[in-house]
Amino acid sequence: MSVAPPGPDRSRIGRILRRLRTAVGGMGLPAVEKVAGDSGADPFLVLISTLLSARTQDATTEAASDRLFAAADDAASMARLPVRRIERLIYPVSFYRNKARHVKATAAILLDRFGGAVPATMAELVSLPGVGRKTANLVLILAHRSPDHICVDTHVHRISNRLGWVRTRTPEQTELALYRVVPKRWWPDVNLFLVTWGQNVCRPIGPRCAACAISDLCPRAGVPPPRPAAAPPRRRAPGRPRRAQARTRR
Image 1 (cartoon, rainbow, N blue to C red):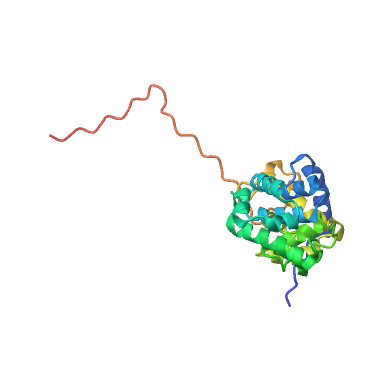
Image 2: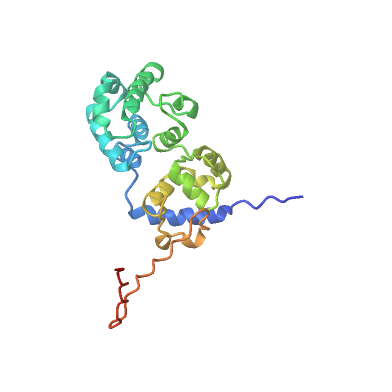
């Protein structure tokens, strides 16, 4: 009879998260967290900036959000903007044409079905155009102060597997697995800590393990060993004669 391997140590996970809380303190916030902080966690602005952030670098997301919100900062004013203008305002976020349509349609649905407010349940949020579980979870955490959700993006998925907390293939699987192993008091913080760490230290390629604050607690699951330094080219000893060139045929 086979015995299942023991699960991750919850106290060890807590130690890691406590260290990360200190370590990320001097690092810049991810773009959506900046929007939440600057806007007083305005649910509409958090929702729209999260929509823009998908597969987009933070600097691009932040600049696009600033331009868009200068033109429209609530559902009513956003719904009045033409799609083409939204496209121009948010370019060059990835898939900006699709996102422009989603932003306008979301604003219209919020006005029509929710009185202009951003809903506070997973089921209602994922009914909006372009909103999946990752976006919904981040809105629930940042805008609605939910203690009951974990937001998983590619950084959280990658680092959770490297740390050995989970063994999963997709972010969706990782989210469900993390609910079982991470102490609940840390659920709202997992995304902020691991995304910030993933952007600065635990990078997808070339993670900075030597500079990592949790290196002694990390099994580095799936991380290839560093390549050995290339040997310097051989130098000819001084005074050593060159080989005689081969004689040319007559």
